[in-house]
Length: 162
Image (cartoon, rainbow, N blue to C red; front, side, top):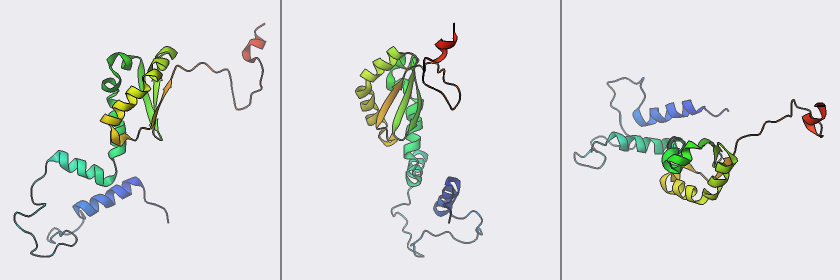
């Protein structure tokens, strides 16, 4: 049996949390395990909650903390790395716990490699849910003369210039 997609899992989770939208309105919605008449006027769970608390608990229940923390980390790179450093580097993405940062020159990539421990400590303090285990700094890519799936070793394009 195929596993349901993420959208289907989210819909089913919302259906469990908020009730079936197709159910008749005259039926009273009851929490699982709640008995009729067990509601106490000033009991636990009766106080209104703020929107921020509700969103935080919902993202925790649905397991969205890590993707949200990762996107927040990428969006706040200027605050994390500093204004001058962020002018010369851009976070490219996060893959399997590795943050990839594209630098505009090899000198900036080398400088950021020396600052790796400091940047990692800032990430660990500010974004612990992001799951960042290491950082990879890349300089600019050199042009590749390799064309197509097959190539042979040799001097490359220099042997055709003259």
